[in-house]
Image (cartoon, rainbow over all chains, first blue to last red):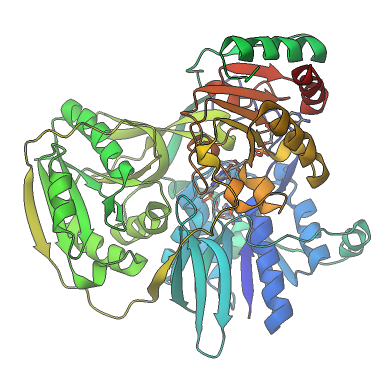
Length: 266
Length: 322
Ligand SMILES: Cc1cc2nc3c(=O)[nH]c(=O)nc-3n(C[C@H](O)[C@H](O)[C@H](O)COP(=O)(O)OP(=O)(O)OC[C@H]3O[C@@H](n4cnc5c(N)ncnc54)[C@H](O)[C@@H]3O)c2cc1C
Ligand SMILES: Nc1ncnc2c1ncn2[C@@H]1O[C@H](COP(=O)(O)O)[C@@H](O)[C@H]1O
């Protein structure tokens, strides 16, 4: 089972995120990046398949320098990834979903794979379309929001569960090679030990420039189909009553408010 | 005449709410650009659903009927919708940003070579160009986008943003479209898997204490458990808590979990991502404790406490005991 996993470095979710003065991007200076939560589950699923069936796990990332993708890649290596391919160019932060999918397509089309995994969505841009777009460009079947995978290499198919709404799932049989977008909770991702991360420092990361893919900035910028007008912090729709003060004061005020509203039994 | 096409979604004999929500927005846009609104529904043996859909007041409902469309499959939907939309050429095709929609919309956009924008919370046309609003960074930021000028667009629409229209009583026209779907599917539907029997039904509770990733580790769940006991409520959670195995799936609130409407929903260390909000935003009273003042949960909270939950909750429990 050769598995390609697409991984994206995204800002850590608990950070304060603010908009740049010109409203065209977020302020990125002090942000820390890590592997997208969904991709971390996708990576684990690939490693589990490798442990079961053998084969190779390759991670692919398309990133700007400022997202510090090397750190993410080192962690991937420390967990057992065989090869990492990194397309690095600052222009990549200016792309939209479709353009990024096409860049990924140019990387992945020449790789050998039985499966490709992406996350269901990236925490930052939230498109939830890269996986299905990539599969369609490659001409391989796909299934989205996967919570369980059983491959039958002999039959050339995988049986997967797709998560629907409200706790319902459906089982789908998919011909291989195929692409799956992986949902959180499908497994329990392993941690990379510091020692292993340090050992992974020596491993080579295959760095690819756009020109190595036969592309240039102008071409890929031309693939964009959406253009940012402005970014802003959404207006609050509901009037929220904020309770302030020391913990004791906040707690007693809350008790009082809840009593007034009649939601406490006594 | 210009047409806006809404792809209706149905499952297990019911039209899904998103199909109707999209009609509301479609009509609004149609009024502005002088277009008509149609729905398209795919399936087999669903005449009653087609009739029902037609009573929501659109110009026309297209029924793509084929045995191979009995259950949703990506290959079936892609093949049927590609040829149908190529023929109709609507200026805008609206698809739900749902488990089903996000599976086939990108494939359709590639096969039709049409610009796609996903998870839109608002959209409008300005001089023939589509402009949309979406949310990024877990709902912390909104972004407005211009979509490249094109003869037609595909947009997926976030559920629960628009209100479904009333039934009009007037029946829209129904047009059955027969089509050939050839070739073998590469993806086959095998069956639904129902949620497991539950230890408890959180949707019946009047008071819910819900914990998110901010609870930090499994050990800490017991703080919330104690609060639930003292306040007379049940314990629930956001997805990461369940993903980590700290609480069973039956406790998950949100799009892929339970929808709840308790008298009191106490959110502890939950950021308020849309998929969570979908499951609890209609609660009567929402109290949020979060140390990030910009957490989107505060947008829908009635009472907000910006603080470390570990500082507030223990004192709160103490005071409730008194
Ligand atoms: C298809 C799909 C379906 C999904 N379905 C669901 C669903 O049904 N339900 C669901 O919940 N999610 C669902 N999600 C996931 C959703 O997108 C979010 O990832 C998730 O809701 C985030 O959970 P959270 O708020 O607990 O975690 P985070 O977003 O990580 O937020 C944690 C919060 O805790 C706060 N915090 C940290 N420490 C403290 C402290 N000591 N005191 C106070 N506050 C603190 C932080 O400020 C932060 O706001 C789904 C996603 C997808 C793609
Ligand atoms: N720049 C990128 N590099 C590598 N993978 C990506 C990139 N952008 C998106 N992906 C993959 O596509 C998934 C869905 O992202 P999105 O469609 O942007 O929400 C992510 O979870 C990744 O697996």
